[in-house]
Length: 110
Image (cartoon, rainbow, N blue to C red; front, side, top):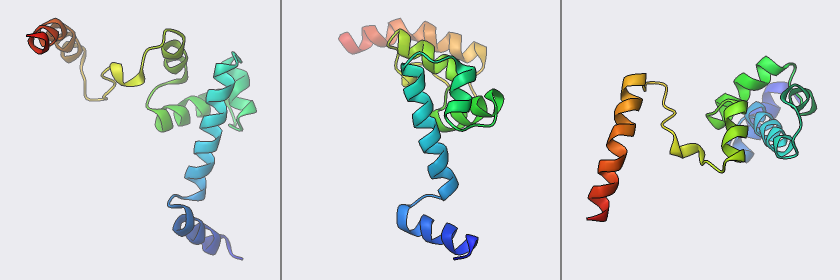
């Protein structure tokens, strides 16, 4: 079986490329290791990434948060979606978002 036939067949069968599937498996393993309290440098290697920098970039690509932020959010039970982590948000927009929070809460309670 050729490499291209495998890649095409895999995507048709599972709806994602084999590389995306592998990245998802590695990211889930990294999350499991984070829950177990492993250090990030060890997690990178144990989950199958070549180094910590590559792990961090791939984790952020998959999850939307850097590993350290993900761990901090898990420790304080903060949901990932509770922070406006959009790349287009500037510091001034974030401050505006926080300043509107109390008024939005008051409006919904009335």
